[in-house]
Amino acid sequence: MESVKKPRRVQYVCKRRQKKDRNGRLMVHFFKHHVQFEQALFACSLCSFRCQTQQQLLEHITRYAPHIKEVKARGITDLRSNMNGSEKPYTVSEAYIERLGDSSLEQCIE
Image (cartoon, rainbow, N blue to C red; front, side, top):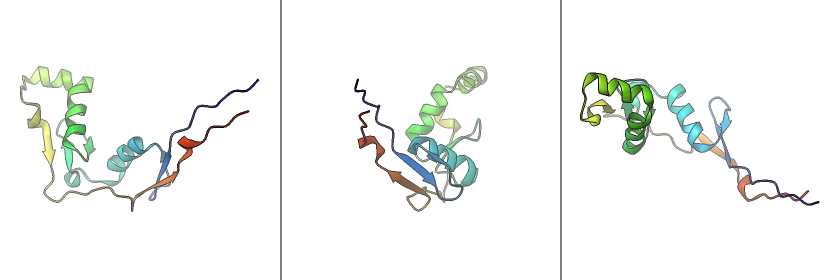
């Protein structure tokens, strides 16, 4: 009997610590472990979350349950007040994260 394996996702590696993961998760790792809070392009003032886009930060603030609770407790109506930006941001590029290969195209038949 033939079975088709699910295609695996493309893996990336952090060049500083050799951590391997999907691109999105590796970006979270990089911001958490290698970028200082003051250098993040966007950062949450309620926690230490850092990211590269305003949309990612807005999603973080509106979907992360402890933040939703904290915002309600403080009576905050404008979520953008919890969004910090850096004047000298650190951007993550291919110099720090490397694509390992396009394994998503691999389909093995056993």
